[in-house]
Image (cartoon, rainbow, N blue to C red; front, top):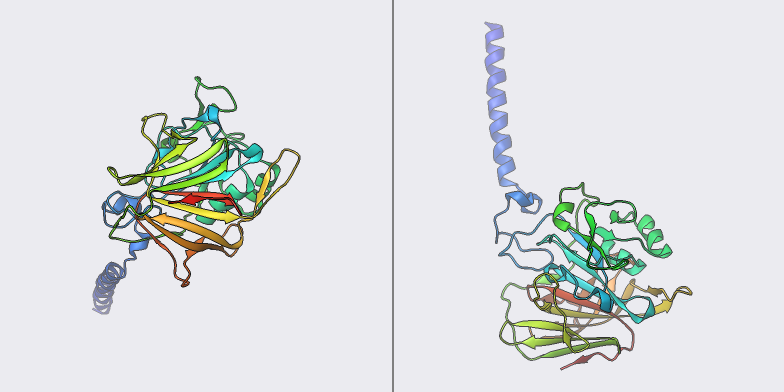
Length: 329
């Protein structure tokens, strides 16, 4: 009798406990921790675009992409959520393209890392994709414990485009990279987006003249409501689709720089704060960028100390030297 009573009591406690546990878990479910495959499109906005009509992925890749004339048109830049552009040695510019919503089958040409791109990737908590790098870049990868995929050490999912010659022929299949083990555990919010997406045509042109060979323009297209990108007065297009690259937000960060070595490689100071200009929703916003460390997330703060809120969409961020005459009209 005593054994029967204890058995019934144990069963009651187990059933009751399971019931309370299930109810508590359901009520306290953290939406921020729901796996991407369990989300419904439109339920949560993307961390990198603010758009909630597509399903954001749970992995963020940061890919170094070349921008010399022989590398254009590039593949896959049109699918990036955020693209950083900064000077490299010899007056050329190079890109760091971030992918969180679309993982194209062909991105490139992929090129070598520079320290400021390493630091930007770490600030986002991204998985870093590159082909080799400068001595300082490798040092920063190690210092920052940045998870990376380096074509100098692995082959797949890198591949060669036989129509191009090295060192402009290495590409990456991001869709296949998704099947490999992640080298970063997550990524951070940096940008804030509004929900109404209202736009004006107050600002129609943004010119970023890095130099005579890399004169960048963004011109507002009233029909499609995007800023279309030009380089040296020619449309900057995607090789695979033929479509012109475009942006919804344009951010210009002003930084100090110095030459590091005889090759002309640069050091760009990413820590502290500096001037910035944001064009979003057709409006110009003068502000400052702030990073507590060289690999910390960035915050864009207006003259009132409030974080600048962007329109949902793709963002291009131009890292430029202090004193560069940027034209916005």
